Image (cartoon, rainbow, N blue to C red; front, side, top):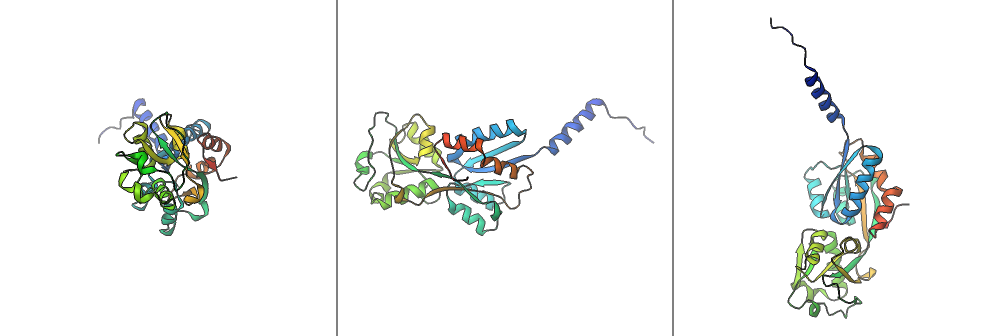
Length: 256
């Protein structure tokens, strides 16, 4: 019969570390790309205050919703419009009782040229002339909320038909912002908060609120989430630290 050899202290230490890692809790958040700057600050403060980890995956709301539909392991979802949250709710993928309208935003026309002058965005805006042979950067106009809102606003103002051939579509609003920030496109349509976060663009004007549906960011817990931290982080998103971070980036906080 082979003799029993007691484990070394190093081996015991490795077992203890593995057990500790297995017990560690974190929350995984799928969040619209436009909240990245604020969320980076919020998650850092959450970890600092609680010792728990909030890991955030940023992308267009449409891409994130489809990943959740495909079974991606998310605990919370922050969408840049109600439509994609409605889709997940209809599929039975979110906990309806946790759904809350978290944030509001506005839509702006931006330019790469720091000397560009302000314009009034009305049906008389000579958008096609302003672009010339260049492109207008927008998020995907049939899928990503910023692109959907932007197209709706241009249609409401009677500017879409002239502008559509010149639109350069990006995977999400931050990618559209980058096209203007780097000068690859002279003009773009993004959220006011995105323009606030990027010093290399100039805001030319804001789209009238009645030219598109209200820009609302709902948040909800994914129904199959088993994270012990998810509820705490959801509450933190509606607390004073998160409110201050969101407001610094220009969001309207809708929760009391």
